[in-house]
Image 1 (cartoon, rainbow, N blue to C red):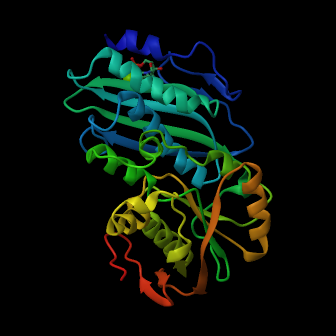
Image 2: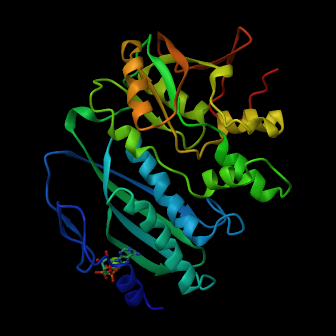
Amino acid sequence: MDEFSLIDSIKQTYYSQPTLIKGIGDDAAVIRQSASDIVTAVDTFVEGVHFRRDTMEPFHVGFRALAANLSDLAAMGATPAFYLVSIVIPKTWTEIEIAEIFAGMKKMAGKYHMDLIGGDTVSGKELSLSITVIGYVDQDKIRYRHTAKAGDIVFVTGTLGDSQAGFHILTNPSSYDNAAYFIKRHQLPTPQIDFAAHLQKFTRITLNDVSDGIASEAAEIAEASRVTIQLEDNRIPVHETYNQFPSDLQYNWKYFGGEDFELLGTVPSADWSELKSVAKLLPVRITKIGKVINEDTSGKVYINKDGRDYTLPKQGYTHLK
Ligand code: ADP
Ligand code: MG
């Protein structure tokens, strides 16, 4: 397929976003200024580095790449509106496979009425997918990382370690409980856009999405906010059949695994019960996993286990005995 028939095939027949003036078809897209602030992010996914063809169908590659990007918008409290796709296509990928990548992105985009408004198509050695997302947020409802304060409750949505468990199942064939669940969490993750969109009533919430693992995400909040975070090991939410995996892998995945695309955040303790009610209505599982213990400049994260505090390294393994 040539570049032009690919562009024709992915061009939407109508657009959903009212602020769009010009989508695909000219030299650039045009969006009219709205009252909200614009939030934008880009992520790149390279074959062999960010995904493997033996564990991901082309549809999953597209779906998951856009999900990862949308997770960043969710962590800013933004509502997604547009995406642009720059793709490098090698000869080893068929037209049908490329179409499936776009179908995966379209499926994820459709959940949030996002429009595909542009991109670039070139040939090259490795498949590479670079997605730019654009969203909107009310000026006083942006969720930065630097707003956590001593006394805040630290919470996380969903369960952790599932994506890595799914990858483990795909790469270590054997018989597992709930294999389909874990594999789905790896291949077709759900960004917490709806949860983030329902936090309008809260004046101060800090958010970060779980792309690298909560150890890293918590450290980013702690550093940006200049506070210390203390997590409780026995509160970290995992799936009910998560304990089927070796215990060192359980620890590794839930703290350092990442790619669950859940949201880690902090909220003033006075707002915690209100936040739980909001989550319950959606419904989104949220769990209190710790607290912000003091304001200093260390940016440390402790994990409390059996009454003892261990320093949680920002990356890498921690061996809790
Ligand atoms: P130009 O040569 O002016 O850069 P292109 O031929 O690259 O134009 O693209 C034509 C139109 O198709 C533009 O609107 C561009 O944004 C869009 N487009 C090209 N590739 C993609 C893609 N992979 N995904 C979405 N839109 C694309
Ligand atoms: Mg171009």
